[in-house]
Image 1 (cartoon, one colour):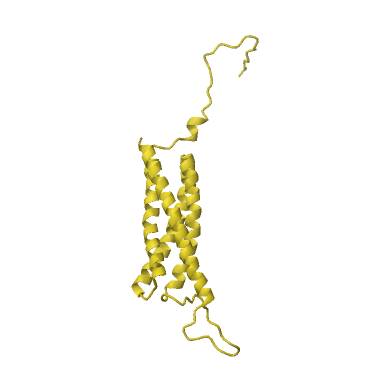
Image 2 (cartoon, rainbow, N blue to C red):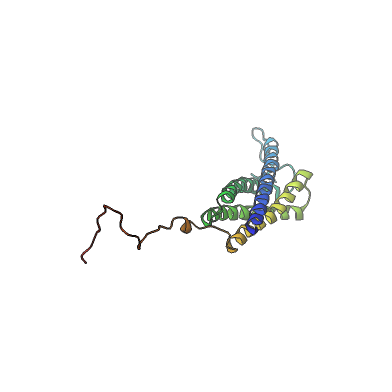
Length: 189
């Protein structure tokens, strides 16, 4: 019964993380599109403004550009790790745990980086509601992804994983009598 609870909770967290990664990707994509539409334009012979940065975003503050770029990367890697997690939920073996954990920890590390930049952006202030939403989702994703990683490891250490070693055990009969018409093989060692 405990296995069913762990798998159900892991499946819920996985789908929640997948939906939140899609939302983070959509908001960060909007912010990047908005920044590309409102870039600096200089005429012939004009110099770039003093505050020019290749990661310029017309909304937010100095940390917005980096947060949006790392949020996009974290969203793509996080969505891919959720797909790996769906495979793990279906198989639920120690071998699928390794690949699911590796991709989940990579996505969690990138989410941690984007969350750190979101905290810096919160500290600097001066952002709009869509960026506040993006920051909120990054902070929540950091916690739920960590909880998912801990949950699938708790299922592993609880002994709820089947092993391939149990399924491929060859059975040999040493006490059975030879079948009629078969020859016995003797070796001279």
